Amino acid sequence: MKIKHVSIIAFVTLLVAQSASAQLSSSFYAFAITDQNSLNAYTSPTTGSLVASSMVGNVQNRRINHLATEIARNRVIYGVEDTQTGAVVDIRAHILGGPGAGTNGSILNGNNLATTIGSSTGGGSFFNGAYYLWDDGGTGQGIVRMTLTAGGLIDTISKPWGNNLTGGELGDIAIDASGAMFLFNELRDLYRFDVNNPDPAQPLVLIGNYSLAVGGSGTRQMFIDDLGRIMINSGTTGDWRSLDPLVPGSSTLIPGINLLVGTNTFSDLAPGGRPVGTVIPEPSSMLIGSLGLLALLRRRRSI
Image (cartoon, rainbow, N blue to C red; front, top):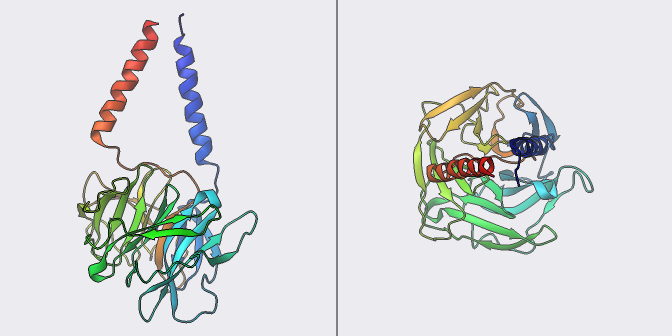
């Protein structure tokens, strides 16, 4: 049987069209929380608005951090810290739309954070049904993993790579579609880590320092957008920078909008509801994929 090359082109075109439509299915580009505990939403790098003015209500001595987006439940997850002790005292979720929109409540489900998380100001991210938090508290640094119940509450809390990672303090984490976690610390060192690797001794791999490429008080916070770029916001001008992990220290300016008021700065960033792209395909994977596609095309032509 002879298969026309038109069929291959049509099939590829369909896949591209489906991918493009999937990325346009959500109106959110990114979420940001501020030092004043407000939640902002970007629909593009240059368009955004306030979602909630306070994520902790009238509770004193509290600040929010560790922001992550759970697309399946249309909500953002974040940690609540005690400003006097630095301890993470609660994990909460804010529903963004649909049934229960605007609902903001604890999902701790009786779990005790004190036994797992130290005095942490690190970031958060969501990947493959689990919420990840970077514990940068002193000698107890490590990556905390929280699984969820079918109802969206926290089921288990563990530190699979705990107390052996030294990425530094005041950073953020972001996980791409392949499970590569990136960590950006106070000194603007960018690290890479594989959350698919269960080895408890797996180290953070230093990519490089980006101090010369970026500036501003907000550039310790990052997320991975739907194009697979590692994005940071200046926190002062509102412009964005895309960090290039293939060229350590290099970044690209992307004009943006400043949603901040006065001296307020972002304390964390998270992706919007669009599918997150893969940042760095491994060189070997790229080669295998290219050879496989070439072989497929040759086979089709010979049929």
